[in-house]
Length: 312
Ligand code: GH3
Ligand code: MG
Ligand code: MG
Image (cartoon, rainbow, N blue to C red; front, top):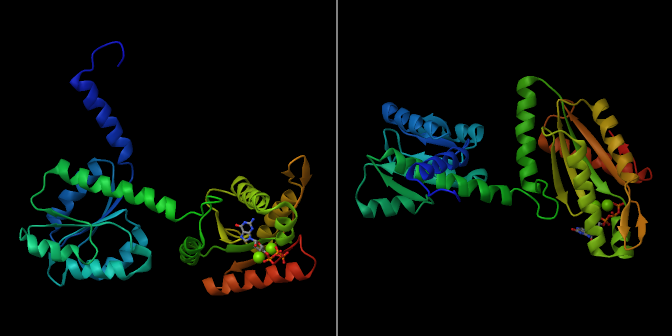
Protein backbone atom coordinates (compact mmCIF):
# COMPACT_ATOMS: atom_id res chain seq x y z
CA UNK A 1 0.00 0.00 0.00
CA UNK A 2 2.85 2.40 0.68
CA UNK A 3 4.91 1.69 -2.41
CA UNK A 4 2.34 1.66 -5.15
CA UNK A 5 -0.83 3.58 -5.72
CA UNK A 6 -3.89 1.91 -4.24
CA UNK A 7 -5.87 0.13 -6.89
CA UNK A 8 -9.60 -0.33 -6.94
CA UNK A 9 -9.04 -4.12 -6.86
CA UNK A 10 -6.86 -3.84 -3.75
CA UNK A 11 -9.66 -2.10 -1.93
CA UNK A 12 -12.17 -4.66 -3.10
CA UNK A 13 -9.85 -7.46 -2.00
CA UNK A 14 -9.36 -5.85 1.39
CA UNK A 15 -13.09 -5.34 1.80
CA UNK A 16 -13.67 -8.97 0.83
CA UNK A 17 -11.27 -10.30 3.42
CA UNK A 18 -12.68 -8.03 6.15
CA UNK A 19 -16.13 -9.08 5.06
CA UNK A 20 -15.32 -12.78 5.40
CA UNK A 21 -13.85 -12.48 8.89
CA UNK A 22 -16.45 -10.00 10.11
CA UNK A 23 -19.39 -12.13 9.13
CA UNK A 24 -17.84 -15.22 10.60
CA UNK A 25 -20.53 -17.41 12.07
CA UNK A 26 -23.22 -14.85 12.84
CA UNK A 27 -26.35 -16.86 13.53
CA UNK A 28 -29.51 -15.70 11.82
CA UNK A 29 -32.95 -17.13 12.53
CA UNK A 30 -35.21 -16.66 9.52
CA UNK A 31 -38.94 -16.66 10.34
CA UNK A 32 -40.70 -16.88 6.99
CA UNK A 33 -43.62 -19.00 5.73
CA UNK A 34 -42.59 -18.75 2.07
CA UNK A 35 -40.09 -21.61 1.85
CA UNK A 36 -38.54 -20.53 -1.46
CA UNK A 37 -37.93 -17.02 -0.20
CA UNK A 38 -36.57 -18.28 3.13
CA UNK A 39 -34.14 -20.53 1.33
CA UNK A 40 -33.01 -17.69 -0.89
CA UNK A 41 -32.19 -15.49 2.14
CA UNK A 42 -30.52 -18.45 3.74
CA UNK A 43 -28.23 -19.02 0.75
CA UNK A 44 -27.36 -15.33 0.53
CA UNK A 45 -26.48 -15.06 4.22
CA UNK A 46 -24.56 -18.34 4.24
CA UNK A 47 -22.66 -17.09 1.21
CA UNK A 48 -21.48 -14.21 3.40
CA UNK A 49 -20.24 -16.64 6.07
CA UNK A 50 -23.24 -16.70 8.40
CA UNK A 51 -25.17 -19.60 9.90
CA UNK A 52 -28.90 -19.74 9.34
CA UNK A 53 -31.94 -21.58 10.61
CA UNK A 54 -35.39 -21.36 9.02
CA UNK A 55 -38.64 -21.42 11.00
CA UNK A 56 -41.71 -21.51 8.77
CA UNK A 57 -44.30 -21.26 11.49
CA UNK A 58 -44.15 -19.27 14.74
CA UNK A 59 -45.32 -22.34 16.71
CA UNK A 60 -41.77 -23.62 17.09
CA UNK A 61 -40.22 -20.19 17.44
CA UNK A 62 -39.40 -20.30 21.15
CA UNK A 63 -37.87 -23.79 20.97
CA UNK A 64 -35.73 -22.75 18.03
CA UNK A 65 -34.63 -19.57 19.80
CA UNK A 66 -33.48 -21.57 22.80
CA UNK A 67 -31.63 -24.15 20.71
CA UNK A 68 -30.15 -21.93 18.01
CA UNK A 69 -29.21 -18.80 20.00
CA UNK A 70 -29.42 -16.39 17.08
CA UNK A 71 -27.52 -13.12 16.83
CA UNK A 72 -30.44 -11.75 14.83
CA UNK A 73 -34.01 -12.69 13.91
CA UNK A 74 -35.19 -11.91 10.39
CA UNK A 75 -38.96 -11.77 10.62
CA UNK A 76 -41.69 -11.92 8.00
CA UNK A 77 -44.66 -9.66 8.82
CA UNK A 78 -47.56 -11.68 7.39
CA UNK A 79 -47.73 -15.42 8.00
CA UNK A 80 -50.79 -17.69 7.79
CA UNK A 81 -51.33 -18.51 11.48
CA UNK A 82 -49.59 -15.67 13.27
CA UNK A 83 -48.36 -12.18 12.51
CA UNK A 84 -44.71 -11.25 12.77
CA UNK A 85 -45.67 -8.57 15.28
CA UNK A 86 -47.17 -11.15 17.63
CA UNK A 87 -44.14 -13.39 17.17
CA UNK A 88 -41.81 -10.48 17.93
CA UNK A 89 -43.69 -9.61 21.12
CA UNK A 90 -43.48 -13.23 22.25
CA UNK A 91 -39.70 -13.12 21.75
CA UNK A 92 -39.43 -9.87 23.70
CA UNK A 93 -41.35 -11.28 26.67
CA UNK A 94 -38.69 -13.92 27.15
CA UNK A 95 -35.95 -12.78 29.50
CA UNK A 96 -33.28 -14.66 27.58
CA UNK A 97 -34.11 -12.93 24.30
CA UNK A 98 -34.93 -9.36 25.28
CA UNK A 99 -31.95 -7.98 23.41
CA UNK A 100 -31.65 -10.09 20.28
CA UNK A 101 -32.14 -7.81 17.25
CA UNK A 102 -35.37 -8.38 15.32
CA UNK A 103 -35.51 -7.11 11.76
CA UNK A 104 -38.74 -7.29 9.76
CA UNK A 105 -38.50 -8.15 6.13
CA UNK A 106 -41.82 -7.60 4.43
CA UNK A 107 -43.57 -6.38 1.30
CA UNK A 108 -45.52 -3.95 3.48
CA UNK A 109 -44.76 -0.45 2.22
CA UNK A 110 -47.25 1.48 4.36
CA UNK A 111 -44.98 3.55 6.57
CA UNK A 112 -47.56 3.83 9.36
CA UNK A 113 -47.92 0.04 9.56
CA UNK A 114 -44.13 -0.33 9.50
CA UNK A 115 -43.77 2.05 12.45
CA UNK A 116 -46.49 0.20 14.39
CA UNK A 117 -44.68 -3.10 13.79
CA UNK A 118 -41.44 -1.60 15.09
CA UNK A 119 -43.09 -0.48 18.33
CA UNK A 120 -43.19 -3.98 19.85
CA UNK A 121 -39.43 -3.85 20.17
CA UNK A 122 -38.11 -4.70 16.74
CA UNK A 123 -35.06 -2.89 15.46
CA UNK A 124 -35.56 -2.24 11.78
CA UNK A 125 -37.85 -2.69 8.83
CA UNK A 126 -36.55 -3.85 5.47
CA UNK A 127 -38.84 -4.08 2.46
CA UNK A 128 -39.07 -6.89 -0.08
CA UNK A 129 -37.75 -7.31 -2.64
CA UNK A 130 -34.33 -6.66 -1.15
CA UNK A 131 -30.95 -6.51 -2.80
CA UNK A 132 -28.64 -9.32 -1.58
CA UNK A 133 -25.83 -6.99 -0.53
CA UNK A 134 -28.24 -4.73 1.33
CA UNK A 135 -29.60 -7.76 3.21
CA UNK A 136 -26.16 -9.05 4.24
CA UNK A 137 -25.04 -5.57 5.30
CA UNK A 138 -28.15 -4.84 7.35
CA UNK A 139 -27.95 -8.22 9.06
CA UNK A 140 -24.23 -8.32 9.76
CA UNK A 141 -24.02 -4.79 11.17
CA UNK A 142 -26.73 -5.53 13.73
CA UNK A 143 -25.49 -9.04 14.49
CA UNK A 144 -21.98 -7.71 15.15
CA UNK A 145 -23.26 -5.01 17.51
CA UNK A 146 -25.37 -7.60 19.36
CA UNK A 147 -22.39 -9.95 19.74
CA UNK A 148 -20.18 -7.21 21.13
CA UNK A 149 -22.86 -6.02 23.53
CA UNK A 150 -23.71 -9.53 24.75
CA UNK A 151 -20.07 -10.35 25.34
CA UNK A 152 -19.87 -7.30 27.57
CA UNK A 153 -23.14 -7.89 29.39
CA UNK A 154 -22.63 -11.59 30.01
CA UNK A 155 -19.39 -11.05 31.88
CA UNK A 156 -18.42 -9.68 35.23
CA UNK A 157 -16.23 -6.61 34.77
CA UNK A 158 -13.71 -7.33 37.55
CA UNK A 159 -12.86 -10.91 36.55
CA UNK A 160 -14.13 -11.41 32.99
CA UNK A 161 -15.94 -14.54 34.19
CA UNK A 162 -19.60 -15.18 33.37
CA UNK A 163 -21.96 -13.31 35.65
CA UNK A 164 -24.67 -14.74 37.87
CA UNK A 165 -27.59 -14.63 35.43
CA UNK A 166 -25.61 -16.21 32.62
CA UNK A 167 -24.37 -18.94 34.89
CA UNK A 168 -27.97 -20.07 35.38
CA UNK A 169 -28.49 -20.19 31.63
CA UNK A 170 -25.26 -22.13 31.16
CA UNK A 171 -26.28 -24.57 33.87
CA UNK A 172 -29.66 -25.07 32.21
CA UNK A 173 -27.92 -25.76 28.89
CA UNK A 174 -25.42 -28.22 30.36
CA UNK A 175 -28.12 -30.00 32.33
CA UNK A 176 -30.32 -30.61 29.29
CA UNK A 177 -27.28 -31.72 27.33
CA UNK A 178 -26.34 -34.14 30.12
CA UNK A 179 -29.88 -35.56 30.18
CA UNK A 180 -29.76 -36.10 26.41
CA UNK A 181 -26.32 -37.72 26.46
CA UNK A 182 -26.90 -39.49 29.79
CA UNK A 183 -23.63 -38.09 31.09
CA UNK A 184 -22.79 -36.63 34.51
CA UNK A 185 -22.31 -32.93 35.28
CA UNK A 186 -20.70 -31.59 38.42
CA UNK A 187 -21.61 -28.18 39.82
CA UNK A 188 -19.20 -26.49 42.19
CA UNK A 189 -19.61 -23.51 44.51
CA UNK A 190 -16.42 -21.85 45.73
CA UNK A 191 -16.03 -19.19 48.44
CA UNK A 192 -12.86 -17.46 49.62
CA UNK A 193 -12.19 -18.06 53.33
CA UNK A 194 -12.24 -15.17 55.79
CA UNK A 195 -12.31 -12.74 52.93
CA UNK A 196 -13.66 -10.00 55.14
CA UNK A 197 -10.45 -10.04 57.17
CA UNK A 198 -8.34 -9.91 53.98
CA UNK A 199 -10.20 -6.72 53.05
CA UNK A 200 -9.88 -5.38 56.59
CA UNK A 201 -6.18 -6.16 56.84
CA UNK A 202 -4.93 -5.18 53.35
CA UNK A 203 -7.70 -2.99 51.95
CA UNK A 204 -10.32 -3.42 49.29
CA UNK A 205 -8.04 -3.12 46.20
CA UNK A 206 -5.86 -5.96 47.48
CA UNK A 207 -9.04 -7.94 48.18
CA UNK A 208 -9.95 -7.40 44.53
CA UNK A 209 -6.57 -8.81 43.50
CA UNK A 210 -7.37 -12.01 45.41
CA UNK A 211 -10.74 -12.26 43.65
CA UNK A 212 -8.98 -11.82 40.29
CA UNK A 213 -6.44 -14.42 41.37
CA UNK A 214 -9.17 -17.03 41.83
CA UNK A 215 -10.59 -16.13 38.40
CA UNK A 216 -7.19 -16.39 36.72
CA UNK A 217 -6.51 -19.79 38.26
CA UNK A 218 -9.98 -21.01 37.26
CA UNK A 219 -9.29 -19.98 33.66
CA UNK A 220 -5.88 -21.58 33.75
CA UNK A 221 -6.78 -24.91 35.37
CA UNK A 222 -10.06 -25.79 33.75
CA UNK A 223 -11.04 -26.69 30.20
CA UNK A 224 -12.68 -24.43 27.64
CA UNK A 225 -15.80 -26.62 27.88
CA UNK A 226 -16.00 -25.98 31.62
CA UNK A 227 -17.87 -22.84 32.64
CA UNK A 228 -16.62 -20.61 35.42
CA UNK A 229 -18.64 -17.74 36.80
CA UNK A 230 -18.53 -15.11 39.50
CA UNK A 231 -21.52 -16.00 41.60
CA UNK A 232 -21.34 -13.06 43.99
CA UNK A 233 -18.73 -10.93 45.82
CA UNK A 234 -16.10 -13.55 46.71
CA UNK A 235 -18.14 -16.53 45.52
CA UNK A 236 -17.58 -18.46 42.32
CA UNK A 237 -19.33 -21.29 40.53
CA UNK A 238 -18.01 -23.88 38.14
CA UNK A 239 -19.81 -26.26 35.80
CA UNK A 240 -17.88 -29.39 34.85
CA UNK A 241 -19.58 -31.34 32.04
CA UNK A 242 -18.90 -35.09 31.72
CA UNK A 243 -17.41 -35.12 35.21
CA UNK A 244 -18.64 -37.51 37.93
CA UNK A 245 -18.44 -36.56 41.62
CA UNK A 246 -15.20 -38.41 42.48
CA UNK A 247 -13.26 -36.83 39.61
CA UNK A 248 -14.72 -33.40 40.41
CA UNK A 249 -13.62 -33.81 44.02
CA UNK A 250 -10.06 -34.62 42.93
CA UNK A 251 -9.90 -31.71 40.46
CA UNK A 252 -11.34 -29.15 42.86
CA UNK A 253 -9.15 -30.30 45.71
CA UNK A 254 -6.07 -29.87 43.51
CA UNK A 255 -7.36 -26.42 42.61
CA UNK A 256 -7.90 -25.61 46.29
CA UNK A 257 -4.39 -26.75 47.14
CA UNK A 258 -2.77 -24.75 44.31
CA UNK A 259 -4.68 -21.64 45.29
CA UNK A 260 -3.61 -21.95 48.93
CA UNK A 261 0.03 -21.78 47.78
CA UNK A 262 -0.44 -18.84 45.40
CA UNK A 263 1.26 -15.76 46.84
CA UNK A 264 -0.35 -12.32 46.74
CA UNK A 265 1.54 -9.12 47.35
CA UNK A 266 0.68 -6.16 49.50
CA UNK A 267 3.58 -3.83 48.85
CA UNK A 268 6.76 -5.65 49.92
CA UNK A 269 4.77 -8.13 52.02
CA UNK A 270 3.32 -11.35 50.56
CA UNK A 271 0.46 -13.44 51.89
CA UNK A 272 -1.67 -16.42 50.87
CA UNK A 273 -5.38 -17.06 51.05
CA UNK A 274 -7.55 -20.17 51.10
CA UNK A 275 -10.92 -21.16 49.74
CA UNK A 276 -13.62 -23.73 50.42
CA UNK A 277 -15.83 -25.55 47.93
CA UNK A 278 -18.99 -27.64 47.77
CA UNK A 279 -19.87 -30.04 44.94
CA UNK A 280 -23.20 -31.44 43.70
CA UNK A 281 -23.47 -33.82 40.75
CA UNK A 282 -26.12 -34.73 38.17
CA UNK A 283 -27.79 -37.29 37.92
CA UNK A 284 -27.78 -37.65 41.70
CA UNK A 285 -29.41 -34.21 41.77
CA UNK A 286 -31.63 -33.50 38.83
CA UNK A 287 -32.55 -29.80 38.75
CA UNK A 288 -30.78 -26.46 38.69
CA UNK A 289 -32.30 -25.54 42.04
CA UNK A 290 -31.29 -28.91 43.49
CA UNK A 291 -27.71 -28.63 42.26
CA UNK A 292 -27.29 -25.09 43.58
CA UNK A 293 -28.88 -25.92 46.94
CA UNK A 294 -26.78 -29.05 47.50
CA UNK A 295 -23.50 -27.44 46.35
CA UNK A 296 -24.27 -24.52 48.65
CA UNK A 297 -24.94 -26.70 51.69
CA UNK A 298 -21.78 -28.73 50.97
CA UNK A 299 -19.89 -25.44 50.89
CA UNK A 300 -21.42 -24.54 54.23
CA UNK A 301 -20.24 -27.90 55.63
CA UNK A 302 -16.72 -27.22 54.29
CA UNK A 303 -16.73 -23.92 56.18
CA UNK A 304 -18.05 -25.56 59.32
CA UNK A 305 -15.42 -28.30 59.22
CA UNK A 306 -12.64 -25.71 59.31
CA UNK A 307 -12.42 -24.15 55.77
CA UNK A 308 -9.68 -24.72 53.13
CA UNK A 309 -11.45 -27.95 52.11
CA UNK A 310 -13.84 -29.45 49.56
CA UNK A 311 -17.05 -31.35 50.39
CA UNK A 312 -19.25 -33.44 48.06
P1 GH3 B 1 -16.10 -17.14 55.25
O1 GH3 B 1 -14.76 -17.78 55.46
O2 GH3 B 1 -17.13 -17.71 56.14
O3 GH3 B 1 -16.52 -17.17 53.82
O4 GH3 B 1 -15.93 -15.62 55.69
P2 GH3 B 1 -15.83 -14.36 54.74
O5 GH3 B 1 -15.26 -13.24 55.55
O6 GH3 B 1 -15.14 -14.69 53.50
O7 GH3 B 1 -17.34 -14.16 54.35
P3 GH3 B 1 -18.32 -12.93 54.41
O8 GH3 B 1 -19.44 -13.32 53.50
O9 GH3 B 1 -18.64 -12.58 55.82
O10 GH3 B 1 -17.54 -11.70 53.78
C1 GH3 B 1 -17.40 -11.53 52.42
C2 GH3 B 1 -16.80 -10.17 52.21
O11 GH3 B 1 -16.51 -9.97 50.83
C3 GH3 B 1 -17.70 -9.04 52.60
C4 GH3 B 1 -17.63 -8.06 51.45
O12 GH3 B 1 -17.34 -6.77 51.90
C5 GH3 B 1 -16.50 -8.57 50.60
N1 GH3 B 1 -16.68 -8.33 49.18
C6 GH3 B 1 -17.76 -8.60 48.42
N2 GH3 B 1 -17.54 -8.25 47.12
C7 GH3 B 1 -16.27 -7.74 47.07
C8 GH3 B 1 -15.47 -7.21 46.00
O13 GH3 B 1 -15.86 -7.14 44.85
N3 GH3 B 1 -14.21 -6.80 46.34
C9 GH3 B 1 -13.73 -6.88 47.59
N4 GH3 B 1 -12.48 -6.46 47.83
N5 GH3 B 1 -14.48 -7.35 48.62
C10 GH3 B 1 -15.73 -7.79 48.37
MG1 MG C 1 -16.01 -16.08 52.15
MG1 MG D 1 -19.40 -15.37 50.97
